[in-house]
Length: 108
Image (cartoon, helix red, strand yellow):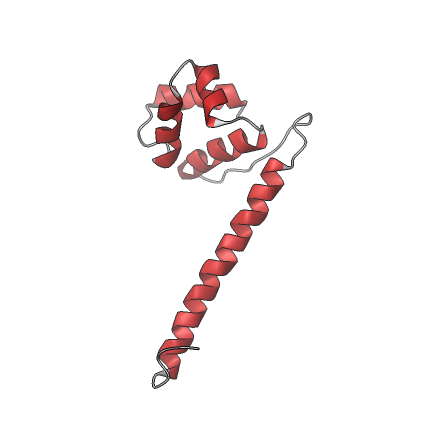
């Protein structure tokens, strides 16, 4: 029940806003489940329409390859905390060379 009974339009806006967030989370869960359940023995395509989406692609590629942050760090010869920082900051903390190394390690 909406706490804004006296303002039905505002109440509906709140409901719509929450529903959009729920729908977005459901889409993210579906995509995550698709990634973790993909067959790693066959090539997996993740389309990118903009370089701004490259961080998302790198994270999705790691998940689809069933590689943990620790395993990626081991492949790259760096500390797991660095990989975590890369992903937490959408690779803004990584240099271009580091992004290329991650991309190469993941086959992207």
